[in-house]
Length: 464
Image (cartoon, rainbow, N blue to C red; front, side, top):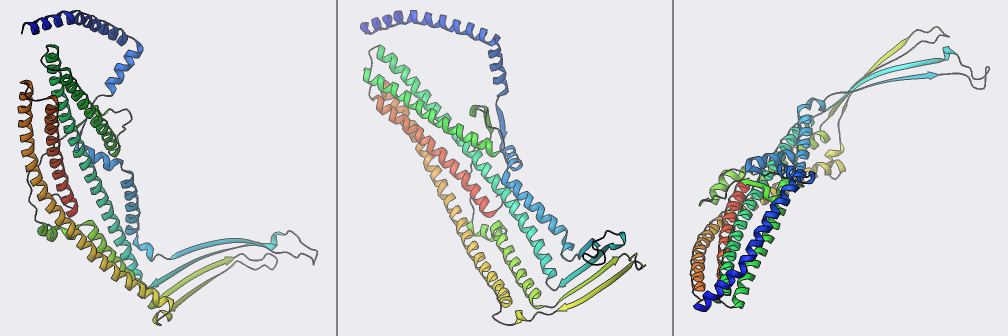
């Protein structure tokens, strides 16, 4: 005991000059920083630090920004605008074709009667205008197909918007989980540092061996390395998230982005068969497939009527030309009109190309119905699997909570044993790593449960 006290006194005498030098260095650093802040470079650095202040982002703000900045969603909006314009101008399907023309002419002898001459009386002009209209029995169906195309494009846009919102939500909660993981690793590093300080003091007092002290210091560096790796990954994911939401991530530091939200979970019980019965018909892929069947059926009828039914064509044309000055002929004009009915014959003959065109439309409808059956079967299995997986995830959470409690108790006991000399540093490090791993596993299970609920909501296209 006397020897230990002597060693402690020698250590204090040795470290006293060092502490005094450190104080002088700290004062010198303060002076240098003050002078640097007065310089132009220092002022620019301070302004840059003020400009790169932290920003707060809520989930709703992130979703709104993503919708406004998404390039793919903008393209879908343009397609929707085009389809809406066509649906609002259905009268264009039966609007007549209107044409107008004008021309000039000149006539003269070339080799006879004195050859080519330029005379005003030999020049002339002509004007004409015409209107033509074609009507067939498939015209109303064509208008219905255009309206259905607009409805399908509207569904595509809304589905893309919802899918983007789900993607942003998942990224948001993933970042929250990664930030909580950083807090766990920081706590692990803090515990390792405190234990390292205790070990270094004990080593100086001769209470532990150098090997044990080195193992403790190595555990600190390992914890710091894990912390740095996790932060680099988190910073990369933050930049991806900022890009997804349309914000400039060039000068943004990950530490300056604060997400307002927490991962809150509660046990949810979903009956798969009830979800299938209530929400399956409104799934976008199911609705889209039904629209495809309707469109193909209309196309089949439109081809049949356009190919087999009589069509009516009518036109009227007016033309006028000036008189001839040489013969004193006055201005003359004429009007002509025509009305015809066309009755196709070949579509009624089996084996012809027109008949095969109508027949292929029936095949497309049958294939689309089979695709609908397959889509419904796939959707039902997806909903059932997601509900079953969510129940299993809750069981995983309960087990992970028990493991985290046991791991924390085991670490406290191991730490106490280490301080009493009954456990080695490696044993303490393993216990600390086991505690962090158990907490990380619990965090991963809670995140998976939250994302599982989002997957079910996406599968039924509803907020549960």
